[in-house]
Image 1 (cartoon, helix red, strand yellow):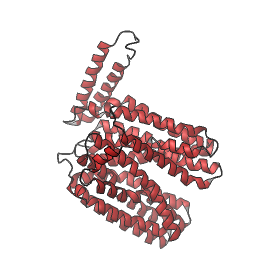
Image 2 (cartoon, one colour):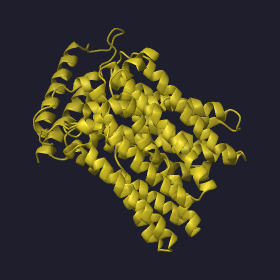
Image 3 (cartoon, rainbow, N blue to C red):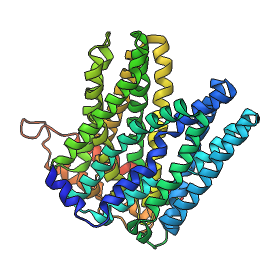
Image 4 (cartoon, rainbow, N blue to C red):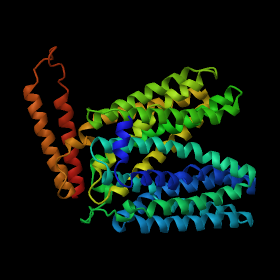
Length: 457
């Protein structure tokens, strides 16, 4: 493990890139709690506070890909610094306007605008890793990125709680604004970030999503996988409350993050020979198995250990997603593609949280964990069914207009289906039991052909 990290950090600028990306993204782990505490403390309304937090998160997910596209067009430094300054100004305005007794609609609108100005540092740093790492070192970089990301969600709420408790909730929001500017500036002024330029070739119509059906397939699995994160983050506090131990909600979530960090370190320490698409499918299924024991828990004592177990596959899952997004993004759209990944993750988490909350009221915390298992297992099934689409090594045809590329991929799959059918026996045998392969390939070829016709139209 040490040798792999030493090789990664031997590249110039990697240390600052990692540290500055964590500092720049630290406010992301603070915003929701800080805005919730501030708006509720000022308005005495959880409804207003919830709407403000929801508006912030939703706007960030929707506008993030637009900012990512601007980064791909104009470079990182200009867009990141502009977004950070705009967001800080909007957060200051949020504090002033809300404390002045403005209508709730104004508070929610300002929170949404601040969320929309969130600097897309996550997408930017993942676009930079291929500039400084290659091969196995790149996989280590993505794994390390996913692992250190957990410190954001662990340290961020702690900073908010301390600031709100010892100073004021308004001070916590202003701290977010200050850290956003300082952290983003530290990242965006680094040599690697300043020197990065996206591919200057003409962007495909529709950007990252319009230019890659494989990326769209991957993002479907990301949405489903996000359900398990939202479900667990609601289910663990609900389980704690149900056991009369509300105090344990925070520690249980921290242990879930700790498990993710441990899993990320273990994952990055290995040299993987299996294809990334197959590995991703296996990790999704393993995530479902790791969360499953929480369904049957009826006492608090085992939950502490099971929370760590549930988180073990989270960072490896995210690492695989980062690698696949970077490989499947069309040329010139890599930052936008990573912001779409974030939007898909947020959408899955939001859906998982909402559904888990309703299930908990009806059937208890176990139902939330069951929902999470179903969601991530469904992602695994979809990843297996579409593995030939999301496996980077299988995508040899990447140039040309979208309809022609899709049609060419359809022809290639159809040819492979014919070849497999010719080799397959008429009746299954012990040596060749799999006769469904040609049918699956043929079905994928038909789907690609239909998508090519739709794209041409």
